[in-house]
Image (cartoon, helix red, strand yellow):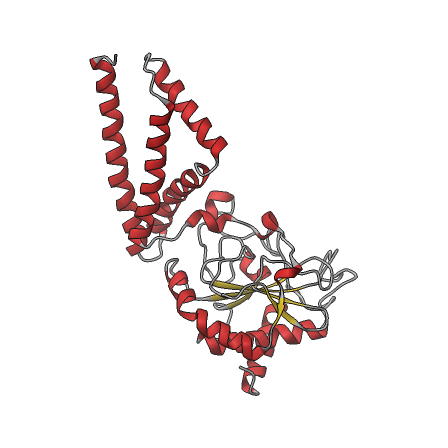
Length: 323
């Protein structure tokens, strides 16, 4: 038999949950409506924690641990709440978070915490060879969805250029396009608006392209035994030309970036790195050097020249009929 004091405590808990849901809905709406700025980033951090909670409760072990923690907290008052009831409350809260997220048009911020190395999936069976004409049609089809996803974050559609740091012709599903040693292009999806885990915190409204190369690369003067080939560089430039036309985005650093440039936040777009130890969003070759893809294209090139060379080649191809 539950005492009046226990009813009072359960009433407090219910009131707190209702108030928390009202507050959370306000945060989701504010985030969806506010322009980019410091206040929006503060709200992003709070929503990120809600996302983490919702995602973690999809794991049965973490959900069971949460139920145990709630009962431990209530246990000191001698309140024994059935675990099924606590589980129902947790599931209700998770569903409420997702519904608020959907109603406010707020993206799942937690998804963008995935780094490319965290998945590292290789599955050559998913890769299909694709022509420039087919790429153009795929990009045109995905254009509206990519724009909508990018707008949710307050940035334009972006294309990120990588090397895999693997072997020639070793392809990974983390990128929309993989480029082989001979310049052949392979696609890992039928929908270019599908979110892939290629660029830390920048995967929404973005396309990832990778040259399969740079195994055991150490520095700008030592790109290892499998450096980018001339054919890979030209194929990547042609992809830039095609995607620029199909997606109606200019060939500049705001729209086409190497991973090295993105890692150093060279477009000035900091999508919330502070929560993970990068307050300025800089972890590239000019800082902690955690990512330096295509900082140079050939050993001995001027550091930082890779992106400009690729964009310049993309513009040349576009001016000469590619795209």
